[in-house]
Length: 244
Image 1 (tube, helix red, strand yellow):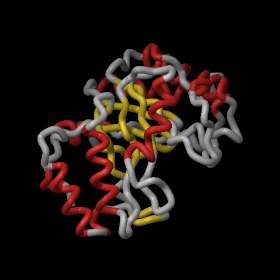
Image 2 (image 1 turned 135 degrees about the vertical axis):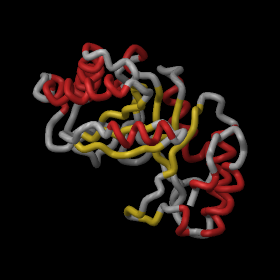
Image 3 (image 1 turned 180 degrees about the vertical axis):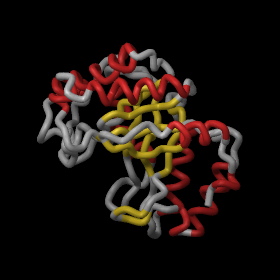
Image 4 (image 1 turned 60 degrees about the vertical axis):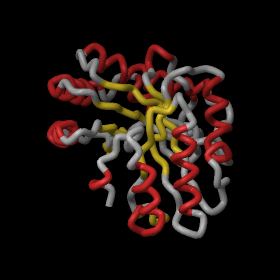
């Protein structure tokens, strides 16, 4: 799986998605509606753009996951808790989904992606959930940092329990990584062991990028080696040669 970020107004990267698929990876597009409001999206202000995007996705006709307006339960995004009500969020999500359905783009795996429950986020996620008819996967976002627990259950357990109250959809760790430092090898092990022990999880995407912290695997050779060792298990389907 390859995750990339899409700005509002960007065209669909059909060639990149096709190339990924042909090399054995499914693409997940994290679609971030910067520069508009979810109320405007829900009211149809972006429908021309949405229809063109949906038609391009339909023409490609291979599976692609889309996460729209993720981390909506936090206070740091334009579409987050300080700017958007849960009702506006759900209305926008359903509208985007329905435009794609109307265009025949049924090859989308709709991935609803809150941040893990922590300070600065809503603890009750159910008002933000668009409903099972509009969601295929639940994609969590959470990182092992120096100030968070260094166990899988300590980091993700509260949120997984919360989501289990209202959804039985398959789950995905849409964004995760471990901060470099003395706990990183331990955190990598905790991630793999936690995913392996969680039958509802379909997988995870490592945020292999330098942003605020250096999340790249190459930043810690020992951790990268442990990642390669653990990901060599057939369960994960990694081509270890591609993990740099």
